[in-house]
Length: 421
Image (cartoon, rainbow, N blue to C red):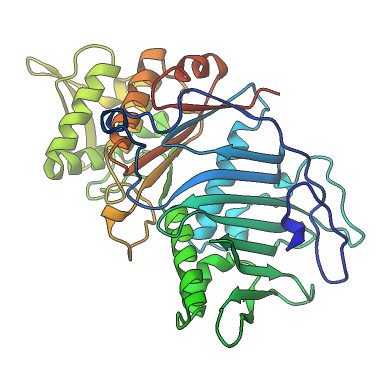
């Protein structure tokens, strides 16, 4: 799998695909305190411990505007930089890995694969171009790395994958026959046969398929399974949030109690939190009071004549304001606060059901985190994320504009990744 090694371009033998040279390290700078600075960590004198496996590094060896880039991911991480610096591309790659870890097919994850190829990347002699992404997880199996090479043209397919951990290469895949829709996989066995070889489909992440293919009879196979499970659990525990204020103003049918990506079913979720999650709902009211204009004493819903639900804001003394009358910034703030205060049971996220929730850490991806927000609202959200994240069950990765990043980088517990060229 030398084709996945950042910064190198090995010879391309027949039947293999090399994605092209990745540049040297981008020199990305990181500001703000180290990730282990949440309030609970300061009290205990140690780092914030995640409840379950988490992504600690994102690698974009060759993806869109990035070459040879690697970014640290902490409990609260903000990507910052001018327009065109690649903030959104970093989150796009993170979400793509998450979806691949959930078992989604390649063509559903990358709707515009050519747009993921670094600009100016030349095709090889067979007219093939592609991109490379990867990540590192930390958990019970120690550091586990995943690197994936994807051919975007002329046919979308995974052409190489490598999973490493504990000083061992645990899984490698390579495209041997371009005429077949499979890759040749080899995984660590450490038994009478040191390596097991078998074909895997070229449109799915091999790591996510290993639990179905590895027997777990030898020490080596158990190591492979532990590393694959850690990687898959970390990747699947992701919720990408893009609140759309225009859609959030509409009344919604009752019963849809899992918050969707665009937060357009806010009223239905508020009805659920009000009746089932009294403590968290009270924290949400307090957060709304801190970040919305005017006093907020309650958040509720009212049922309209047609049976639909409309979210409301209590102002005290019996005064109630429909949520639809709030500004875009207030609606985005309210929905993001709700996301931070809830979990996989309330969010529409494909969490690893076979792993207890107490052993999972949810990562919220928020591109344009500070869009339409004022400084006070952004500060309240970040403080909320740091406070909740101290328990180890929540992480936040977002993008912000440059002026906001300067101030956010000074907040304890917040890491700012500066993409300034």
